Amino acid sequence: MKGKNALIFCVFVLFLTGQFSLDFSRVHASNERYKVSSNDSVPSLQDIIDKAKPGDRIVLAEPKYSGPVVINKRLEILGSENVLLINDKPEPAITIQADGVTVHDINVLQKHAGEESTAVHVQADRVTIRNLKIRTRGFGILLRNAENCILENNNITWDTSQGKSAIGQKGNGIDLFKSNHNRIANNKISNMRDGIYLDNSKSLDIVENMIFGSRYGIHCMYIDGTKIVGNIGEYNMTGAMIMGVRDVLISDNSFAKQKNNANSQGILLYDVQTSIVQKNSIEGNRVGIYLERSSQNKLSHNSIYRNFVGIQFVNAENNIIQNNDFVANVIESEANDSQSNQIEHNFWDSAKVLDTNHDGNSEIKYSINPFYRNLISETPAYQLFFQSPGISFLSGMYEHDQNSWTTDSSPRMKLNQPAIISSTIADKRLLPEKTFLLIIASMLLLISGLTIIYSRGSKT
Image (cartoon, rainbow, N blue to C red; front, side):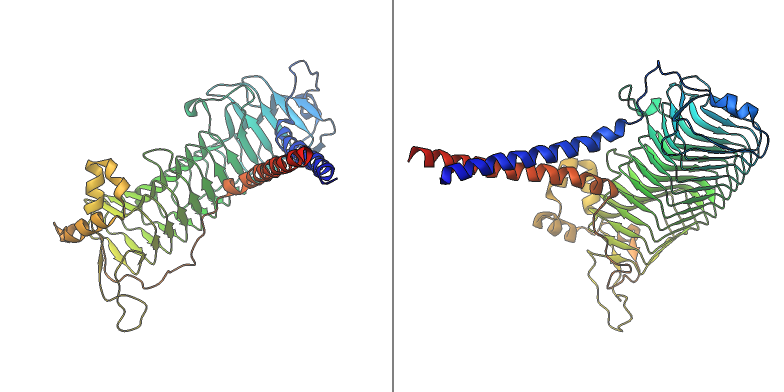
């Protein structure tokens, strides 16, 4: 009787396993919802646009339309989550040449591949692109000489239906050139060359975008007066690459797990002047913050955790580095030809501190010993001995050229910001799959045990 009950329980567990497996496969199948056959016959969206008058509102009722489309009059085009625009031509799926156009709630499939292939090309002012889901074999959204536009709540991803592609074969998710005073907000971009690429465009708002699996999450050149606030970049080569700018605000962003390349950084600042980098979370990168040929910037209240190198200076002078937290970095700081930087009131988890006047700052300076950095630069294999007693002992004996060491004049006794916990968006997305596999493994182990019990019961 006991053996029979055990067998029934095994069958029940297998049934549950099948149900879990079925549900899990549905999750993955949903990613292929927009696969279409080249033989499908669909109406032309251009024909509808040609018949419309300036100022009209076009509501798309059919599930599929064919491109390419050129919008040369002020229109509002509204789709839904089930409307798909398919384009297999070299021209952009959507080209906007008239001011004041609004396009929203459309799925766009740009099937044609190539360096010039683009899903949406904007060549006008005051254009709004909202709630588009774009799969592309080229670029996502291009702005050229376009001002006062809004790009928000769009989802842009590389089309993998034709196989994997090298990073150099891909286009950028959002790409601006000579396009000022635009707002790019709440977009999700994955597996593109650069997530957001900005060139020669002033006074932009880059706000709360999410970028995964690209070369540079945010890549900027000559974008004076721009605000980069509240963005998330994970598993890119570099989170944010900022070059040749003045008066830029980089605040409240999170850049994590940029470490798959020897040159990976959370934030890279090159030739950056009079800018503010504050309240960013920079965790688990090859280099947390890299600062080169940059001066008169203020870096404050950043949380720099678990990077191989916390902060690196190269020919960077007259910057203010204060009230940051450096925690669990292998190498806290590197500096080459970088003098006159004001470094104070930062928290260093390796610092020996003493606060005699109870102001929260240590009266003992913290000079970062470069012994370990120099050691592993000559022999990388010595990384295996990180924090070993022998390395700590030798570091304590190393006193060469202490005047050149990176020194915090008054390190903080406690963290300046709340501690951050390692938890990336991508890791959270993987959690259901890991949980599913754990459940399956547990069930298989349980079934094995019950089978053994049943077998022994049968023999007796």
